[in-house]
Image (cartoon, rainbow, N blue to C red; front, side, top):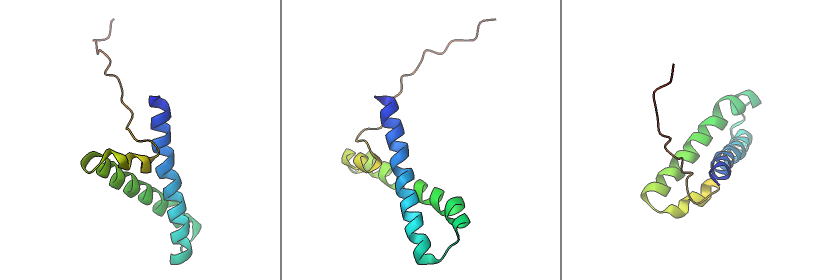
Length: 84
């Protein structure tokens, strides 16, 4: 389930970022290089940051806007020194 959640919570902001960047491209008259190189990653970063913050501090229901209601949880492996 953690793999599914992490993939979904990565893919949804990427798709939203791309869609918003493409929509803004038409309104701002930007070339394709600017959209793919700068605008898309910036929109993804902002989208994820806003809804991750809202999920933590406002309500866990905002997690659905990232594709899955709960963030993935990872096990803490027991760290041991390497054997020689």
